[in-house]
Length: 211
Ligand SMILES: [Zn+2]
Image 1 (cartoon, rainbow, N blue to C red):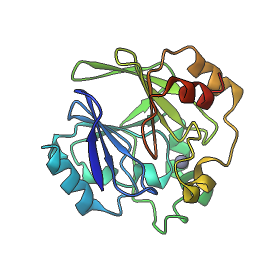
Image 2: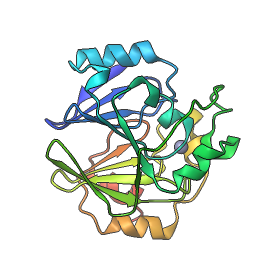
Image 3: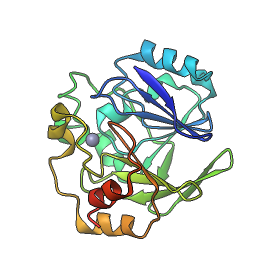
Image 4: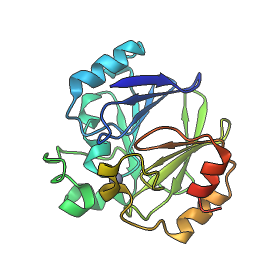
């Protein structure tokens, strides 16, 4: 487990390579919440950042795979936001749409409080976030763009190859052209993926986006 302050606005918690990263925006909004297998480690990590789980008022899940949504229940004050199409996977979880079997866990009840659509805008204590529907890895995958900082949170939409073990989950599909084209219109200084390290090397960003 380790935590890292990326900027004044964004921090990240890494639990294990198989768990999604948890990104924290302005100490109030989370992007993804891991498998939820390591609740004690998550609480410890938040503590080092001086955040209590109850301070979190909002969670955006990039998609419905269990390694990204499994810890949602640890934040009882949080409103859950996912792409509108995620309802299908949550209503009828299968191996394919939640990956729950791979992670040896069953999906706890997950509801969406606020369904999201392409180009929706959210504010987290003044920081603007734009939702971009980026299907491919899963039909409900979204990326989240912070225009002021030029950060792009990609979940698993872009294959970043952080770890061999993960390649089966992340790199199993070509990213569709339409998804990449949507991202080509953005100015991006940093990619913040669902697993592994942030990427701020311009050449690497170009390669990942097929530019
Ligand atoms: Zn995934």
